[in-house]
Image (cartoon, rainbow, N blue to C red; front, side, top):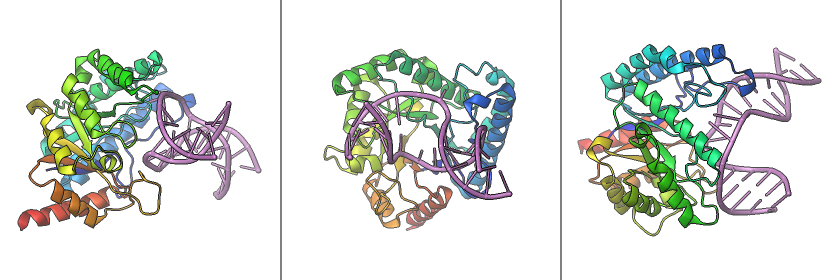
Length: 295
DNA sequence: AGTTGTCAAGCTAGT
DNA sequence: ACTAGCTTGACAACT
C-alpha cells in the first residue's frame, strides 16, 4: 500500500497550482506559471519520496487554461523536456499518480457543450500524464455527474459518452462514488457494463450507501481494476466535527483511521488521504500503518 | 500598503 | 428564482 495526499504541500513553501485570471492570460503567463508549477511539483515529489509518501495527486492547474480556447500556445512541445524530467523523478521513486478534474467536468451533462469542454479537459489530463511518460496505472478520477431528474438516462448518457472518449483518456479514466447521487453500488453497476475501474471513496460511502460494509465495497471495487490498471485506489477522509455532513476533517482522526484499516484487512490498495492538513496527516497515517506492519 | 470582491467552467439542495 | 457549497486561494481592482 502506498499512502499520499492531494495536490498541495503545506510545509515546503511553494505551490504546484499557481494560476491567474483568464482576462490576463497570455503565452508568457502560461509559460511562467507552468514552469513554476513543474518546478514546485518536483520539489513536492522529492519531499514525499524522502518521507515515504509514494502516492500523489497532481493538480489540474499545472498548465493553466490548457484546454481553453484562449490557449493556442503549443504547451506540449514547449514543455516536453521538463515533463520528461519530472516523469523520470516519478518513475525513479516508484510513485503512483492520480489526477482529479474538478466539478465542471461532467461527462453525462445533457448540454453538449458542457460534454465537449469536459472531453477537452480530460484530454489535457491524459496528455499531461502521457508527457510524464506514465503508464495506464496513473489514473484520472471522475464522478459520474448529475442526475437531471432522470438518473437512468443520466447513466446511459455517461456510458455512451464514455464509449466515444479517445483511447488515451478511456485507458486512464476511473469513476469515484460521490456522497449525494452515485453510490459505490451505482458505480459498480456502471463498471460492470462499461468496464470502468471504480475508485472507492470511503468517506462518500459513509454518507451514501445501500448498506454494504466497507470491506465488501472495497472487495467489489478492487475486482474492477485489471492488471494494466494497477491496484485499487481509495480516497479516505473523515467528518469534520461540528460542520455539516460531508466536510473533510482538518486533521487525521486516528481512531476512525484505525477502524478503517481494520475493515480493509487483507485488501491491497493505494490510499489518498483527503484531509485538510495534507502531508501532516499523511505522515501520521503512514506511521500508524508502519507500526501495524511490525506487529 | 492593505482591503475586498472576484475568478472559465456545473450541479444539487435548500431557501 | 436565487444562492451556498463543493474547496480555496490568490489575483486584481479598489481604497
